[in-house]
Image (cartoon, rainbow, N blue to C red; front, side):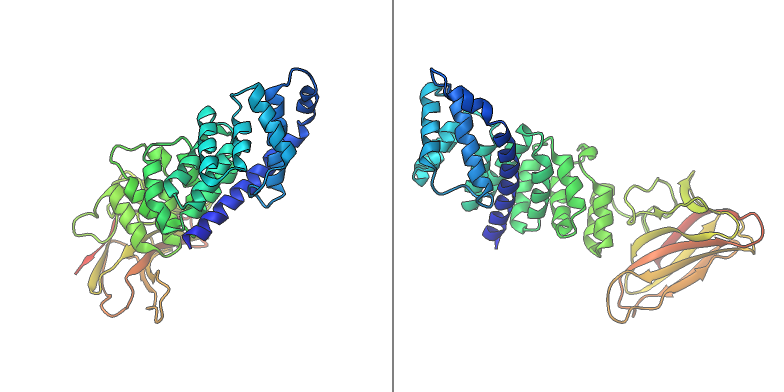
Length: 392
């Protein structure tokens, strides 16, 4: 399973990067061909011709290195090496046709001469994948990303896909702990890939450091993606690592609106349009809507125990008779026998209600706050001091 995954990764990378490189190389081939006919032999021109030939062969071989090298290509590579001993691609091409051990030795020597040759790095990637050496594989990806400005658009999505394999988590943790410059692009790709977000959460927890640079990561997007894909435990665990425990005695996060929500929907997720919206300000949840408008204003994903709980809501303002604001609890889990939605209209002053969750069969709920202004009047502006749920 892992080997097939690696082969697919390598095949895609080499197919695309080599194909693109080959097209560019072919377009530039006239200059080295002109130089090669001059005397003495131009080693760099000979190397270029040999490299172009190999890249073209790779592009025509579904992204794989050829088993045999054209004798004419080998002759160009040999001429290049004789004329200019420091020609990394020529040395690499001479190594392709050798036995495994000699080939690897020549490729390593080529890499020591230059880490900026995609042909050499691509072979090292393929070799590492074939040997299932994941640390080496990721090291060579890192090399290509650091030395090629165009590689990221191809390699980063492939690297993100590979995180679906559990075996990649620890090697990624070792590599990303070094702070590579492409890390933020990796996390951008990961949070958009629903196949890997579970392992991405595990990787993120392994990398967590209280003094870290938060700009590298995409924690809010990752938590949101986990919640959207019903990986609630992982979303909650990551939030707790980043922020800390809930308030003492509370089943909600930020129940008193003391802080601006940073990681919705584990903390408050706020919605706003041109007609209605919600915002956390000055220790309150401010809800507003213009006349004859409204909808979902705020929500939070919460975990309820199989027991009786108490919902307590404290508005700072009286709620007028022509304003409809309600709180609802909807089971967030895709389970059979989903309990009915509980809807609680807010009273003019304080709402306090007991809810029995002992037999619901549901643990994670969406707590939604909806509001609508009537067709008459000027709309509404209401502030809530606290929305809390605690064990009865």
